[in-house]
Length: 162
Image (cartoon, rainbow, N blue to C red; front, side):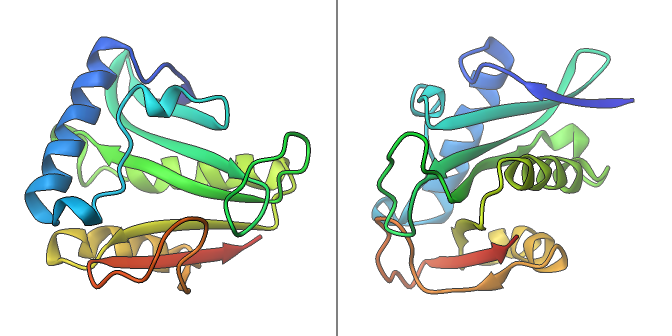
């Protein structure tokens, strides 16, 4: 059975998965269009990080960064918006529904926190097509840039009103 729990992005197996994630991002997008966070940035207080595991084996990860406004500034106690970060499934776990489980877990957490909206940024390249389909199947629609993002031909911005 797959379990999703809060975890540390600095844990050895997670660190390795996040390093693979960053390497893939830089291999598929220009450096100025890579917005993925490394393991140390994912440990920030404004970010909740989860992993999906089965019998202790890492299957994937995902995070929710809390924003207090669509502009992205953070004021403790006033969070109304969130951003999905670092959704990644291990190569061995792809095709098993891990990303869908993680996304639903993150959205359930966002609803429990009474967030109004959840945003994300993903790439425009074919490599990111499965991610865009996953988000669209779960109700996300394209939107203008949010927080500190700017228009970028290599980025797709999406939102889900909760």
